[in-house]
Length: 123
Image (cartoon, rainbow, N blue to C red; front, side):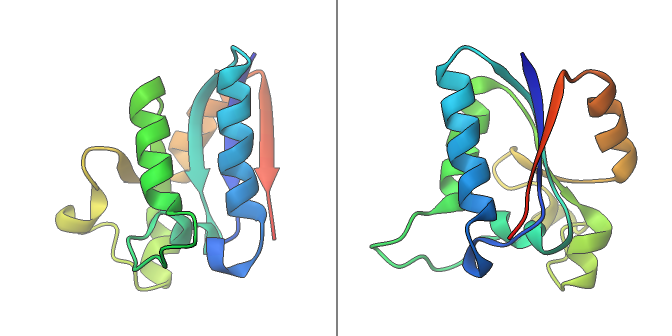
């Protein structure tokens, strides 16, 4: 089965972003595929590099590792990122180590056409 995941919540605001990460790992371990992870609204903060306390999950690093290991893109909505001051449309911020990209809802629609199931994660 091929999944597209939608993340609507930041890691600091609840369990949605963390649940999405755990779901992706479990789905991949079970032999499924992830077509794309799309971060929208407050979810764009889930892939923002920030100081992470030693006793907390570094969600951004986890997403980068999972995506690069399994070959799927992490896309943060450019408009949502700009509205939240993350400036993901600037080239230095747009691509973090070749994994997290600024994108559009059009890219999400294309992924949905190539997906068996869409799972969304809210806080």
